Image 1 (tube, rainbow, N blue to C red):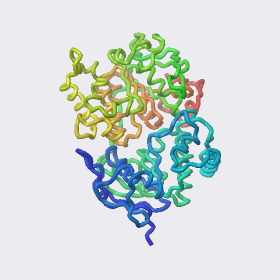
Image 2 (cartoon, rainbow, N blue to C red):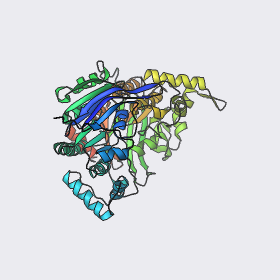
Image 3 (cartoon, one colour):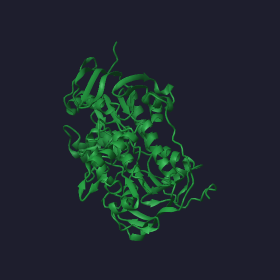
Image 4 (cartoon, helix red, strand yellow):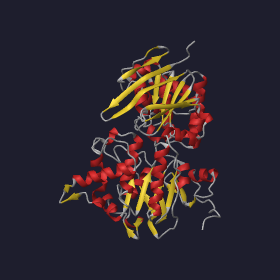
Length: 507
């Protein structure tokens, strides 16, 4: 008896200049948690979009319980029993949980009945959620619960999850995994995409590995180490980031009791933030999403102005200067949101290189863009950071998330900043690309730049940081040496323990 729920057979999809999926085949059984692994640009997102009805394949077939499956739209996929939780949340902050859930349903019931169903499902699956709360007041983990419950109310037979833990705390990840294991035990199949390989090993029963659009292997991830999985994905030995020099120079950037009101009504204002970062030093800043990370980046970039002496760069007060003035002085930043903030989606990579590289790379003359120099700069980023794209004239939105992230980080690193501030530098990036980005930050510090890395990936922060601090409700804990910090100590700092005794290893 065939127990296959979904069978994908020789699925192919090509775009101009690239074959996203090349004769991809795999199967998923009821109740199976199946991982799709691969580098950025390996074809994972295109594949699940075909399964969910967002993209039509050029050739190949899909079968659902042995019958032909050809979803022309997501509506058709949902009607069959396929639900998907996307990497980027599609929620309206000014609406309540129940109202957001209703917007994602084909035929929502009355609000009172829907609220009761949300409470019932959230209780049954260990995802506590108040249907009356505004989404803008929720943490990142709670927002993800809204997306999941919206899917669960459809009673799916297959749940697709794309990078579901990228904005969650370790505690929230465990709650999510308990939910997914319960769904699996009840017979719901789960197709799981993640670059966090220890999570794959903990959760998944099987894995299909993609490389450059082709299936290059299958395995039981529980029988592999995270490093072995990463090397199967990239087809070569994985590089471990290392530091050439740890010599520190003078203070390059200093925050002096920085107070800043958030421009977002649902944001977090900064409260009395103080920090000194030396030349050649990497300071890691952790914290649960929504505790002031975006506001701190905006304050440092100059997108939101502060008191002039609240921020100093090489002893010069810059709090009242805008982004271009700060870039000229050597303070560069890379925000978390790739499309729309770090890069303009419909502009080419050359044009996106011009957006932030004009001043330091001399890409204009007498008010006109020097397009040859701009293309050369874009090509240098593509080459140095192994950005997978047909060329610099391709639009930013045509790149996979990880490749666009490599371009954004590379664009700033190659401008030789005195201070670089990055927010979530390896969010949604595969193991090989993440190692390359982290190495570029370490190399920059080794050359004498000061680096601030804001991230929710604690493993990343512990790997590259000299000192670690945490943001909680807009307040920054005193930084402590990263070496020797325990998980419990980090958890206390993220929870807002600002007055912890300084570690004995701190000078």
